[in-house]
Image (cartoon, rainbow, N blue to C red; front, side):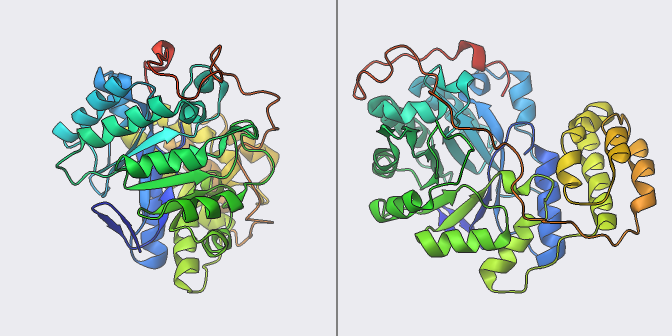
Length: 379
């Protein structure tokens, strides 16, 4: 059980928003897998991150990214933002049009194109700007049942740790929960997440739920994180790539029930076809099949599928092609090798996080202006 403001979830598991991955098709697929394996949909499945300015200006691509399936409830969206005014305007649009039931704020993205403008995991270093943005979002949802939550990283690097201040400020400003990825921006996705920081944040932030994020690749990892840190819930990102059934397994692990086995190769092929069908439904067949291509290696990770099949699937343009290529494997009982192995981005520690000139000079600087001009044309 996890309560986030007005939302009451029977499972404390959240799908992390991932660009190009957590669209409506993937979210529906995860929900279907949970329903099939445990008989209920219990967690929170978050939409791809969208940019507050683009949403406020009603860019068509951004509005399209905010589409939800009729079966999705609660509807959850994550906003990337660097400006309090755009934050307020975007959040008010969500409120006035009933576009979502939950709003998460992204202060965790470590990619250079974001941090060089002071966004993502760079922003909490500017404490007053960060406070103003969180305050703007909470103010825009005042009088509604829409909770605002905040996700951030440990800091920019080991010399610029921000997570305790970020948690305290979010709590003070009325956020309904906070989530911590246990790495700095400099670490990106390398090495191991520092779960001890999640435990420290839980001790520091006491009036709202604290969620942990980082290195949950197996159902038992989620249970271990909650036990070791005392956190109230978990946020799952890379671990579910090619494994939409992971949320059902985590549900089982946290409930103390037997964890269902990973699907056979034959069962995975049926899931892949279903994913293709959903992508075609939401995005059109050609675009949907192109989108599926990035998922192929994740789905077939550890299965004896062969290079030729993978190469053929990387060129598909129709759902029928996908189904025909996978048909010979439909009855395969093969199980994956090392199904809980890390997947997705790994990378190495950045030598230096790319930041705006003078960004580290004064964390209390007033009147910070961040240029997000090139980041508001879509997501």
